[in-house]
Length: 191
Image (cartoon, rainbow, N blue to C red; front, side):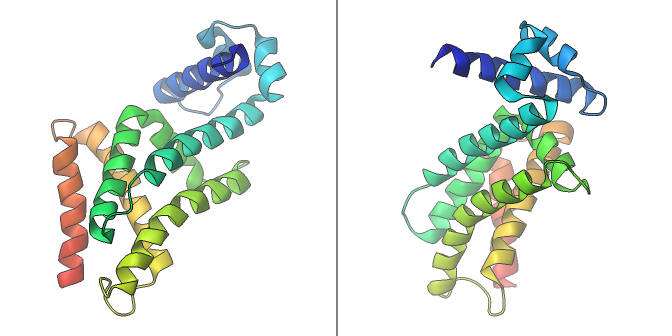
């Protein structure tokens, strides 16, 4: 990892820590720089502004998530969907503040990061949509269920369930949470 990459990562981690403890509202470049242990100018040099930092942080997080989901495998669609759910749960367990940031910014209107978030949401749901399309092609989706809607529903469900798990039911294991999400999907399909 280059020195620039290491600095950027430190700034991302510092931003996530601060967002997790106090939220985005009123968060300043001075606070982010101090938390990261760098000069304020480092933020401006690397990102141009706080908004540029947040935009890059969102892109970085989704890159990490997409990489993990792209490795879900080429097995049967149901196994791959299970791996997708596991991958999302693992990612959001490792980066719970990123999940908070996504939820708060995805649904905040207007958001200065709306264009970035739309692209990032599309990137993740496209990975999920491909698996739902495989299910649909094999007759595994109920008639009338749109693949795009199913993909969005799974992403949104896992995102919110992961936050709920981290905040309200941390005693559950990842496998219990995964089995509940998959059980819900399976139960609706059979119902």
